[in-house]
Image (cartoon, rainbow, N blue to C red; front, top):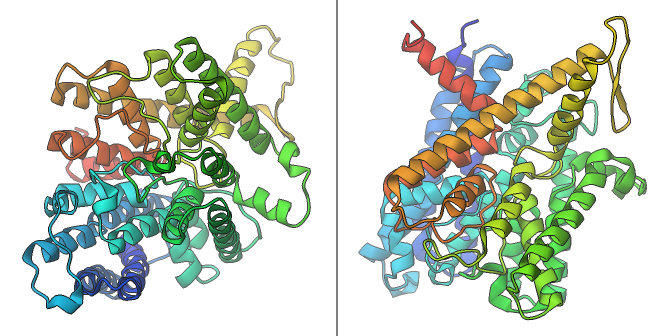
Amino acid sequence: MRVRYRTVGRDVGRILQVVSLMLVASILVAVVVGEFFAVPAFAVAALVMGGIGVGLARWYRDAATPEKLEAMVTAASAWAIVGVLGGLPFLLIAWTIALDPFPAWANTPPTDETTMIFLNPLDAVFESMSGFSGTGLTMAAREEDLPMSLHWWRSFTEWIGGVGVIVLTVAILARPGSGSLTLYESEARSEKIHPSIVNTVTEIWKIYLGLTLASIALFLAVGMGSWDAINHAMTGIATGGFSVHEASIGHYNEPLIEYAVVPVMVAGSIAFPIHYLILKGELRNFYKDIQTRWVFLWFGLGSLALTAVLAANDQYGSLEETFRIALFQFVSATSNTGFGTATIGNGTEPVWTAGATLVTCLGMLTGAAAGSTVSGLKLIRVITLVKGTAWQIGNVYRPDSAVRRLRIGERSLSENQTQREYTEAMVVFVLWVTGLVIGVSVLLWLLSPDHPLEYVIFDVMSAQSNVGLDSGITGPTMPDGAKAMLIVNMWIGRLEVVPVAVLLGVVFRSLDLYR
């Protein structure tokens, strides 16, 4: 089956058109916070992204409705292009500050080391891909030094990226029967709240906005300033993790704030259809739904395990502090949020032991519920792999004539359904581990041998699971090749590998590399 490139071009163009509206909205934010120097940068970026989008959409406006292949290629291509073009505000604002071409009323700040990092286009793209993919790894050495307009753009990219740029496009532009479902599923989503996919994404955005506003109110109630509360609510409910402070949530050194952030990260880990049912009063879904049940079980068990490891190492002053740090870090890692309250490593100097680091890695690997804002393998896929493997082994001891079914939650799967879902989960797992191994190998090759192996694994796992926690390796001083590798890891992790593999297969086939 050949890819219909006109369809891909049309749909990528439509996505770019919608995302360019984010840049237009950011102009208003820059004006409100009094950073008039940033307005031209957002305007130019909006014209570039919107111009490309309009050109593609109009040029290929008569293209056919996408099938699954075109949708996969569209998803992988659009996320890559959005990640690259989303770096323009970082680059242009840094260039504006360095040049300082405006009069005093534009409020151009003095140059600083943190913002000037984004004069390197690769660092600007890294920050953008980290934002849109909901990762939260950063090239900013001190977030406090960034202009408020860039604080906003970082948080906004994560907030939109949390539910997906294609979901945003479907909500704004889609019409029933326009291939919306195919595109929606290409972004690693299958959950539906209503029979109509357009109504489903509209409901998702209503729930998402409500959770964001509730998070802002919670953070204000526990003592965060208004700007901090807005930004941390956006990146917390999106399980993205960008912060306006270098020390993330640890900046506040306030247990009440740390405990208050945990339920926001948990809320971002629960599937939107479950939020919908709970908001309708069907509270039994907290324990009835298999994924939601395991979100709480896994968060609890992992936090206790990490508490035990840290306590055995006598790492912190009291049991309460040890538990609070373990709870926060494990929930942050497993929800793929990436907020931090403790230093895990300083690059070449260990802080946490290998055991504590690898327990946290296990949380990053699994992720939380499918249908939420979380990345990673997803709990339902892990459950399918574990129960499916046991089911496969059990087949050895059963006669060929036996009829066997696999029960996952309230679903009873036939043999054919079990084989299909187990195979799909295994394919994603194998591809996911392959991406991780490639990333670790590249970083080991490019970094100095002083970096502990567990820390290299941690940072690559953090990038590919779209987490954002780091062990002190990821930063502006790392080699450009390592930055590029982590950008790729973030990209494939956000799309759950398969669309990227499909795109690469199409490229290899077009270059006739399969001979």
